[in-house]
Image 1: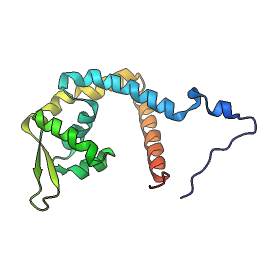
Image 2: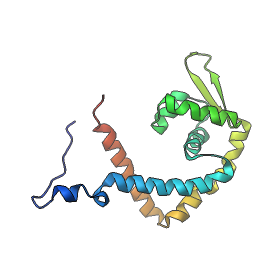
Image 3: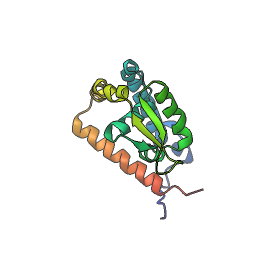
Image 4: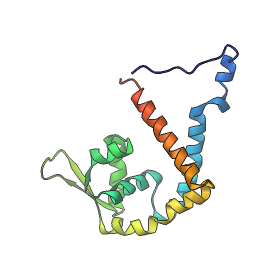
Length: 160
């Protein structure tokens, strides 16, 4: 698929294109940093980091997944995910066992403590909503636009 290059008017200077405040990537990056600060505060009482919270969200939706299934859902490779899963296992929030069908597969399942943590985590989305100080429809539009952006970037990134 061919990528589209944004149209550039003759008046658009290279200097303007290279200003930090004109960079979409910087806006996304700085918004991500701000979002992570909010999550850090909300997740501290749960004893979770943001990446650990994402893993728990996936498992609360559907328990007993393979490492690769969790990785696909979170856009993470197993090298990044494995240390995270080991820390969650050490915290007694999940178990890691070899699949009976295929020993190469590791199945991740919630422990009793991991299942119980879901009730305590219910306050996190409300805290994020309050911190964002935007309406539900506005947040929904932003989320939808970011999903489209993510999907377009994935589709238009050349494979190595």
